[in-house]
Picture 1 (tube, rainbow, N blue to C red):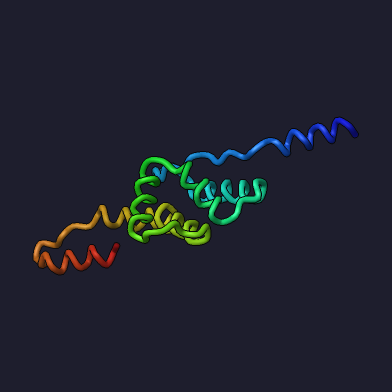
Picture 2: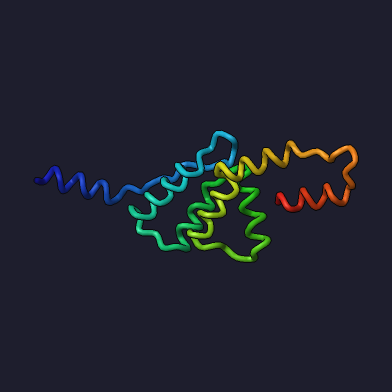
Length: 123
């Protein structure tokens, strides 16, 4: 019984570390979100703490994206909003959108204005 109590006390002192998320091609946004949500449960974070702790571990493209999103919105999102933003930007659909944008070319007889509008609609 005493050994069990010591194990519980040791667990109580441990914190969960969230693995970094770079936003690169091989980064799994769903795995990252599950990792964050596990930390939320274990650490007992509120919404504001969750967003701040998540912001600390995003790197590379994801960090650039997050900084731009904050500057556009002028405030930190709540966790539900941030989660959906991450999925939209770095999930399957976001990657498909980006690939389509990269493949896009102006048609031979397509007016620049029409091509520009098409690209803007993709964004």
